Length: 505
Image 1: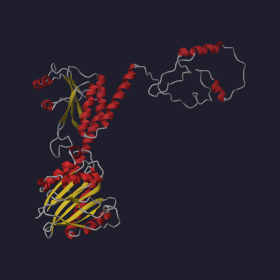
Image 2 (image 1 turned 135 degrees about the horizontal axis):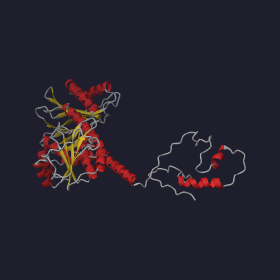
Image 3 (image 1 turned 60 degrees about the horizontal axis):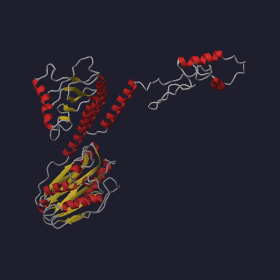
Image 4 (image 1 turned 135 degrees about the vertical axis):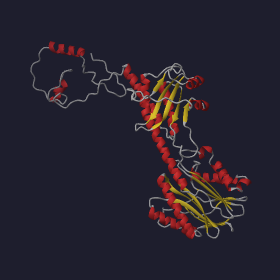
């Protein structure tokens, strides 16, 4: 009779073979059977292979055998009992943590990571509601633009969050022996908790929660992001197992949120630097009205524009795009724009010469970079525009009687050829017509092919009301809203910048 096979769990092989009993109960019959058997006559020594094959179960191999104690040592995996309730519970806990951390790792925004942390903490603690209160200045958008939300909630409305913001969140006791193992502070019954303020009790009774569990969002390096609080509808506190699971999850979640916060801050600083490198105001030139819209990608893109007054009451218009994104692209964009301004002042009446000089500079100073550019030399009094492009999108003429692109020569981007040169194009605009220049990011953000995206742009300009066409500010806003509706214009992760420059003569 052979012993029953040990079951396999999670790909773990049994520690011993089912044909080699190791327990005392199974070895006794083998020993008694060996003693009861008659002595066999002596035989000639068998080869080592035969000796190993004929070795009785449960006996040590001969000294020359590699399996013997004198041979190479064996590394047996530790015995496991997959049927143990403790082992099953441990496997269940690890699977739960793996699933929750995987969901958190898929988040790539600070707010989304905080909301996922709240949701996962509520799952581990069995709490239906919760909120995160950030430290002042922690949110990556706090330094730029409107003040972002400092409190994020789960299962709570805006009015409820407003009330909870008036209640100070408790902090973990410092210096307690269990502070490293239990990172949170539990208040199992707010109604009977000593030292609790009357205002806190009133808010809790009005919102219908009876217990709280608070955890600080502090990284391993000591950076405090804020505080997370979970609310229980009934009095109670998380078990030791729940606290351990939440502690293991929060160690990863806090570091992940801190990383996303720092990444968002770097992106915003890069975008702010790019905006500072662009002109803050447009020049006032008699006979022409200018308007521009510029939207930067989160990582900071290389799209740029410029408009400058030139001698003889002329105006120079430029749009361009440097390949890549991030600080390197922003820095290259700033250098190209500054160089183009110098070339435009010296020889702006010849757009081909301006772009040729810019291409030579790019090839000598930044051989690994490439860029597209469009430069136009406009004379508002005669409504004449002379322009040249290097791999850039053709501008659009928008007027009462026509909406059509300017026929420019096809040319490679700057930095792609050993010597760049392409013929310029001359166009005479009618009274009240607008020259619309843009970067390819406006077309790429639509998610369509370039041809279909350009048809969409042309249709948006043609569908503008008459009053809108007469106002460049209203025209650029109308085109942006039509070509890039809210879902497309507000994509947080889109790598493309958008530049739209309008000049009405």
